[in-house]
Length: 78
Figure 1 (cartoon, helix red, strand yellow):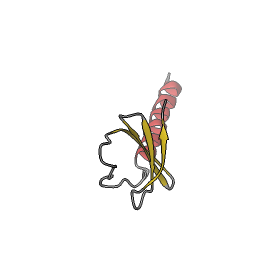
Figure 2: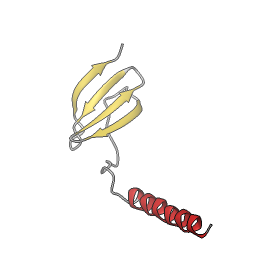
Figure 3: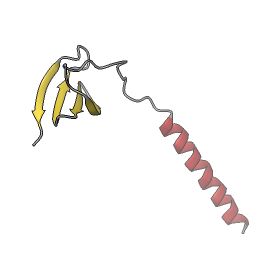
Figure 4: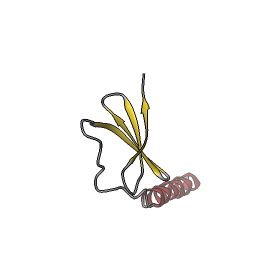
């Protein structure tokens, strides 16, 4: 019974330690705001290495430059 208690406490300490380590990791740097072309409304945003993808309510995906926020590519969804 004592061994089971020690193993359970050790497992709990490991799980809590892993949660603290993973949740304290730095995430991507998010811009304060993203300027979209006139008439578009964002529905979802995804950040990648060197690009930002914005899904709009009019079924388009806009690939933006993360520094200048200029539209690199527009993808029409069907």
